[in-house]
Image (cartoon, rainbow, N blue to C red; front, side, top):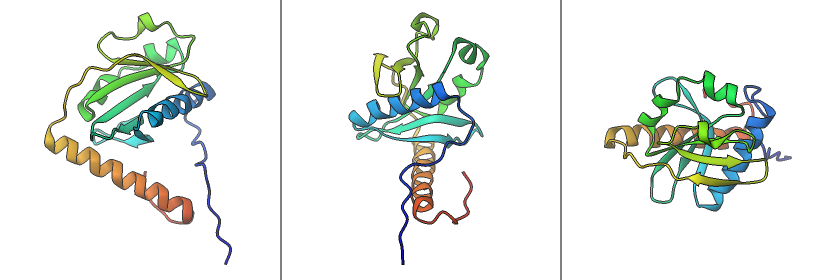
Length: 158
């Protein structure tokens, strides 16, 4: 029996090329820091976080990717993400002025190959019940996605 292993999930079509590059660079940098990430994780609020990271100490972080000034200005939902993480970051490409980003969140500048943290995100620890809910959501999504790589016919909701 032949075994096929897909090494990369296909793009879902919601993100621009710039956003995909920023996500890739941010994920590479976070992985180098020991942070595991999932993209497009549905949150309990019904929103979908661009990147959710789990650090070695169990802290949860959310990275919201903004591919342009217009993308940032049109987004009014990002404050809700703070209720689902210990630290919140924006990740932007080099062309967006850092000065327009809110000063009370972390800031990452990224391209397709890597990223740098320009400003650390302030910590606001999650309540225990919210942390448990988010960790379960993260673990279940990771397990389902891994299963989907070896069994592409497996039906599951994201």
